Amino acid sequence: MANAVTVKPVSNAIRILRYLTQTGAPERAADIARHLSINSSTCFNILRTLVAEDVVDFNALSKTYSAGLGLARLVEQLVTQGQRLQLAAPPMQDLAAEFGVTVTLWRRLGADRIVLVSSQSSPTNLRIDMPAGQRLPILMGASGRLFAGRLGLTEEQLREEFEQLRWVRTISFDNYLREVNRARRRGWASDDGYFATGVLAIAAPVCDPSGNIAFTVSTVMIRGDRSEDKVEALGEAVRDLGHKLEAVLF
Image 1 (cartoon, rainbow, N blue to C red):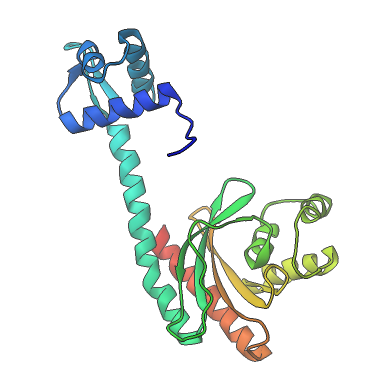
Image 2 (cartoon, helix red, strand yellow):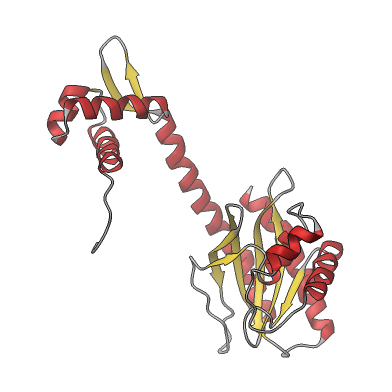
């Protein structure tokens, strides 16, 4: 990749892990260093670090290293998460087809962001496509109103964070706060064209076993395309889908 920055110790650690998984047999530090053309002292220090992190095992009797259980667990977690996201797709597709909307799944990413991990579009001609990998501030949009009521922020702290957001359609903090409180009461939230021009979004939480919001499931559609009663019905359906996805994702 052009202009890519390579951190040599990280690169060597990955090469060592790849080598150990490919050989499938315990190897001495000197042999690993020679095979990968890594300085012996550097290779030894990296191996010690990998052992400390439980991704490489060290046999004190034979003085050999092998891929550790921690590495297998790490890979298993990644595979399992991908499989669970695949299992979440069918119920999302069902809702998209039933209501003629695009259904998206967002995962919390740290303290201040969410990332789009799955999107299912309606089979109708008119649809809104959203690419996976898109990131948003955690308080933005319909999903943001859900998080705003669950992050434990004081009203003043929430106001400070709100003032950093940039909306395409002006919304006051007081109106935002009312929508946050309303979302807390009914279990789903909406954004009526404030985040994206001409788009109505409805979101519901997907909580982990501890009751924290780990994902949100959201629907997006053309603003003004539905009556208030139909929006309410969709909101309740999205809330129910959020509960279904909890059983799938956790």
